[in-house]
Image 1 (cartoon, rainbow, N blue to C red):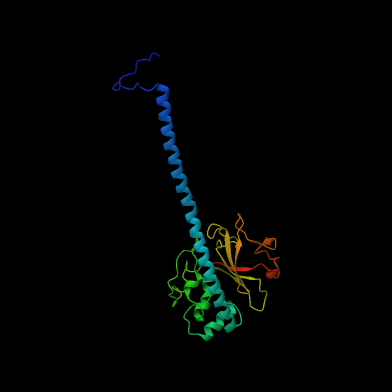
Image 2 (image 1 turned 135 degrees about the horizontal axis):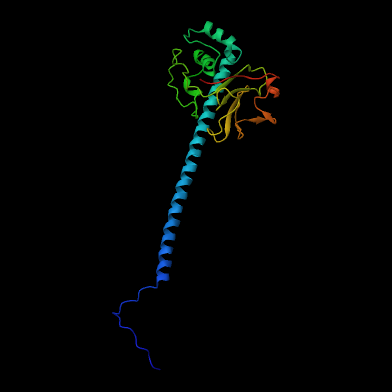
Length: 237
């Protein structure tokens, strides 16, 4: 058999065909784009999960503080026969040397009674929310320092008492001031609700900001625990 002549080893390789070179360049570009997309996707995943981790931590802290407030309410009720209201404000004033003004226009003012009675400190009334984010300094010896604006994150519902309906909500967070709606962004679509039996529950917030119990809005007067009357909600300052 006759062998064809072979090229010399030092002969330069022929230049690639234009189509081959183009395909190679496109393949390299495609690999770079795919790598970039993967990096961006991973970065987005980290950004998505980081706030959720923060929300879970905020919710856990809010629940822990709500339990402490529930214990303080229990101690206050044992001492004054009711949860804080305008009547107990007079009793607290008469029975202590508190310099605090114990009003009833906001949850800050009403919950000051727990401070004046010596059954709580400021720190338990706080939870990090999108509205109330000033951590209490535990200084409460004057009207300007005791649960100052931003240091209370819980709305308070007047009218509850331990011998009454134990399902009645007493304390809630995170409520939107002046409304009966909750901020779903703060605690991963959960609302913290303390009831008159001093249980603490995390209830689901609907997309419209409302919490439904028994097939009705939590604050609907038809709820059995409201006794047919609209709840008297006092929001934080």
